Amino acid sequence: MSETNERQYDILIWGVTGFTGTLVYEYFLEHGNEDLRVAVGGRNEEKIQKILDNYRDRYTQKVKKTGVFVCDSSDEKGLTEIVSKTLVVISTVGPFARYGEPIVAACANMGTDYCDITGELPWVNRMDRKYTEIAAKNKAHIVSMCGFDCIPSELGGLMVTKEIKDKYKLETRDLKATFFEYTFSPSGGTIETMFDVKLEKNIENDTYAYIERKKGIAGLFSMLKMFRVYYDRDFKRWQSVFPSAFVDIPVVLRTNHFNKYGSKFDYALTSSSKSIFGSIITTIAVIGFMTSIYIPIFGSIIRKLLPKPGEGPSLEQRVNGHLDFRLIGVSAPVSEKQPESSKKVYGRINISNDPGYLET
Image 1 (tube, rainbow, N blue to C red):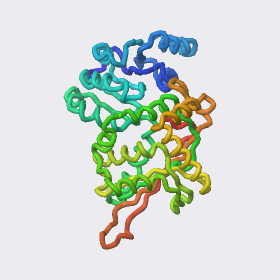
Image 2: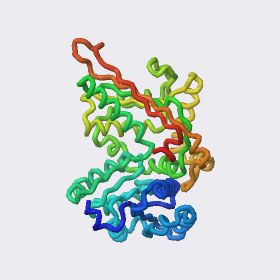
Image 3: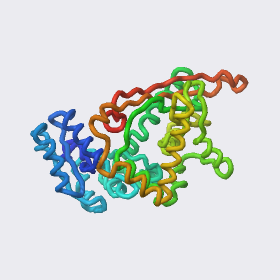
C-alpha cells in the first residue's frame, strides 16, 4: 500500500447507493474523526448525490469533504484511476460474482487495500487464485467475507481454537456452533446473491478449492446430515439446519487450511430451538427456500415476498435485533491411548442489536 500522504482519500465506500453501502457511509459520518478522508462511489451520480443530501444537514462539514466517484463496475480503466486515489476500498457491491472482480483487480494492481462483505466463497477462491500474487507484489491486502455471513463463525472459531491451543497446547478436533437465539432480517442484496449463486460455474470445485470434500455416498450422507433435527446435550436445545451453514462451514474449514486449527479439524453450524417443533419448522422453511432458488416458478413467488435490492430492515428492526451465538470446541486427546482426555472450551458471542446491519 502506498504512503498515506500520496493518496487523496483514506477510505472509498464502493456501492454507497445500496442498502449496506449507505449504512457504512452513515457509520463513518457518525463515528469517523474530522481528519478521516472519506470518498464514496457507484455508477449512478444522481443516486449518490441523493445519499449525500440525506445527510447534509446532520453532518454538513463531513458531507462537504466527501469525495465522489462515478464509474461503472465493469470499467476497468476508470476503476484503476479511482482506486489509485484511496488507501482502502470497502466494497458493498453484490452479487460479487456478477460485479466484484474488476475492482479487486484494480486494487491488486494499484497496491490499494480492499475488503468486502461477500459470502460468495466460490468467487473469493477464484479471486484468490487470480490476484494473490500481484496483490502481494504491490503490497495490497485483499480481505473478503467481512460481513455478518462469516464473522460469528470466523471470529468465534478463532477465539475457541486459540483458547484450546494457548491453555492446553492441543489442536482442535471438533468445533460446533449454534445460533442459540436470534432476531435479524436479510437485505434485498443478500437475497439477490442467494438466487444468483445457481448461475455460478464450477461452483463445487471453487467452493472446495482449499479443503477436502467428501464424494459419492459419503458426500451425500454428509449433506443429508445437515438437515437432520436432533437434541444437543451440550447446548440443551433442539438443533436444525441454518441457511448460512452452507457458506460458513466451508469458510471455516478453509481458514483451518491456512491457520491450522487441527489436522483432523471439523466444523458444524446449526440453529437452536426450544422445541422439536420449532426445529422441524426451521428445516422445512430452509428446504422450501433452497427449492425456490433452483426452481424458477417457486423462486418468482418467493422473491415477491422478500426485500428487493436496495431494501433492508428498518431502523426499528435493526435496533430490536439481537444474536446469541454459542460455540463448543473439543481438543484432540491428550493421548491417543486416552480418547476421553479431550478438553472442551465454550465460547459465546452476544450482540444486542441487529448483528448484520448495526453491529458487524
